[in-house]
Length: 358
Ligand SMILES: NC(=O)CC[C@H](N)C(=O)O
Image (cartoon, rainbow, N blue to C red; front, side, top):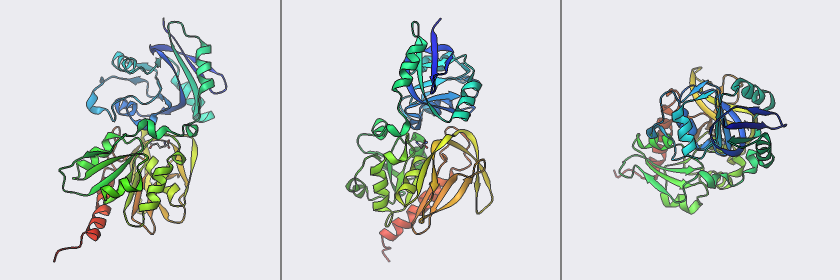
């Protein structure tokens, strides 16, 4: 039988059943999502993390490419109570180690008590606990991955919806989920996906109606280029952001971010809209949060469980951001209208920029 070990920060080693071979290391996190494993596993925001599914059976409806958010699996390794052969085979073909038949309640409890932590993974015929511990030894914290944007971003600009007549969006790709592009294109936007380190001139070339900062992995402080773009354009161009995008916008406009203990990952996180009093169910996947919004941003939505900021509006600029994932995939579609709000804000800019003929 294949050996399989997870070495947790502090040296505790958990044993399971090997489902896809290899060694790996990363930040150990868990998601409570009970559906949408294909979307989660292809979400670039999981780059450099090891993903534990707390839901006990993963893979019961197969693996289909049309549900992928990107063209590869992003977590470094996958842990679950039970993985189907479909998912295990997919992970093996992607070279991503996978382990099941371990006590995921124990893993989740360790993370809840100790916070998201480093881990080492070893799966294979001849691997030992020491191999997993050696991986743990080499593991970096998320904020030490200073070049993580380069691992997940496009290298060159890519245009989607070139024939659309709607607003022009410059989407800074810090690891964008495909569904963000799809949600904008479906609303008639022309979306210019730009590398995470796009320059001011690159954005000026697009002359966007809105500058949109995507989701993405790692510490928002490591995206200096995107932070500068927001500072450069916010006076004249509406700005939107999702997840990492909200954190980058806050950093750019005088707010601060901080690491959470174990973050929010799942598809039923309740969010309160402060003004309307309405609660929506949201998809989340983040380990950092906005700590202070600063003087230029107002918190419009909060997480019902822990009051962390879930939505920000510009006080003196056209800015809207969300900490959760309005594009769903996986998860509930309660908040898709965020994209309508972003494009209405952009329309205001395009009307200002193009004076009426009459
Ligand atoms: N999904 C995301 O954009 C994640 C944002 C950031 N990397 C975090 O962990 O908080």
